[in-house]
Image (cartoon, rainbow, N blue to C red; front, side):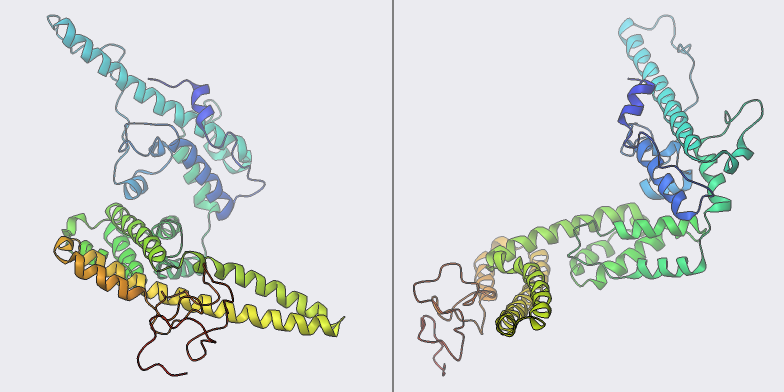
Length: 407
């Protein structure tokens, strides 16, 4: 099905591109380029891999192949009618051939329309002075493609300094933060764009190797790396790397949620941010009270101290949780093939891992999960004392008390 001009423009996420006022620079150019890429990608196409829209009509071939693993090639127009169909072709076969012929024409014409619309959008938001060299006196921009215009703008105006390249390389080498909700490869993708623009591109193999190093530095993708290392060398390219490690990250996040819930961390792990915010507000109030009211100052001093103690406990619990998750993630991957034979043993180990060897709760005693204490207890009984702990249980429950326990 061929899309009309209006239908295509209606699908563009950027109906109008952000204008470049005055002389373009790298940042304004990249913003314009990103919007053009987004618009072209929003129109479906079976060309260029079938999953990238019409990105190939606005992105150079080498860059498109590096990003998607596919070439975007617009076939030559086959003519209005398929003259290759023999006269004696059965009607059913002829009908199928004609349908395919029309579909090919629609693909070609849609690609040409997307390219034209994107080109017109660029021309409309860049001052004529900076693209006038491409403007033929008789034909205008007829023979200029969107790629031609973007290249023309970038070459003189998209200046990238040596300092920008150095910073970009350092950013690419930074360890991945597993708590970042974004895909682990997104940061590297941004760095790739700047490296390509600076004419210092990395090969597919180099990008994959850089990605491996940033993933393994995080300390949680050991098993994922071993699986990757076993892949044939010819398959160790950037596109496959993205698929592999984005999946590993998703699996790790799902496992983290399950283990946090099992260990009783659901409420406590979410309080660290709240405590930090509360602590910041307490310091602001403390500064104001110090200058105005002695009694209020003493009261707020106590509140601030309490918040600091609670925040320290929450952060310590989160550090323990992260350690458990790393151990559990590694074990779960190693045990995937023999889980049924060791399920009883693994369940026992899992229960032991969740207990805090130094834990105590006034209501529930000594056998409590990491993160469960007097302050975080969700089901306290009457008379519950939040301050109770090992060494000072304050008359609380002695359930699970160790034989060698002494106060």
